[in-house]
Length: 379
Image (cartoon, rainbow, N blue to C red; front, side, top):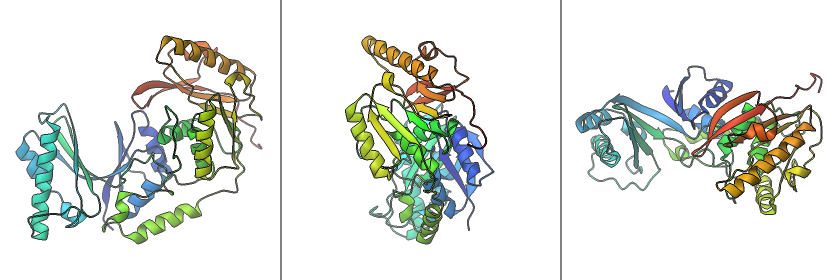
């Protein structure tokens, strides 16, 4: 099989989590950079990584990288790449673009040049002047950074956060990829209770259950590259069979959540049932002040609400204080909360053991980690 350079993209702050996931899948030649992890693989690895990566946004094929300070350099560099190997005569190939700190700063102009260069290359292959673009989709991106052009092909399609279980959303839903990262950064393991007192649409709970049962997050959806002739159908079938065989649904899970908003619980319940955890995840309509998690050595992983107006800020402070009071009555538990609230530790009445800067969408947050004792070895 052909050796490819693949890129797993990541939100800022999650690159090391994506790299760790790739290592767990058996990839070792990793190059970690801002927003992406580059690694080597074959066509089967396009399938496996799309199915298995929990914290990555998408899987790209690295087509090429070269200096481009002029449109001529961009055109010739693009044309030299093997587009004809990937894109069939009837393939749809839109071009997206980004430019930062580069002389070629007009993104639409760069997209046009790249498109023209690819068309010229495909003309040579297929001996035609017109391409209908009514077949499988091959999204190309030209990314210019410091006058270096990176050309990629998107194997994923809709972002990997779209698992397929969430039909409805609450007002400010947590992205599935970020929720999975919060779980992976915590000390939670499937043999420990997990509770979310601000569960919203239930994303943290569902992602934890999928991790607990070793369910590949991409099993319920399709990908652009499933329709590509370069990635044969039997490879997708093989990767999906491997994923199905890896499910460990005999593990007992203790996962619960609550929220003060009945509508949020309604949305979360629908998502949980859609994800196949209707019996495994329990929910209640409950304010945090009345939450009483059961069990020992559990983990709370949560995304407490935050306000944009002063009146809301007062409510947020009150909820964090109530969260802190609840935590004080759970001496064996560990607590993990993502929040943009600067004074979170003050209101929680406890100093975090560890902090990590993460972004919830465009909002800069801290992932605050308050460690409790680890459970006994025989638990």
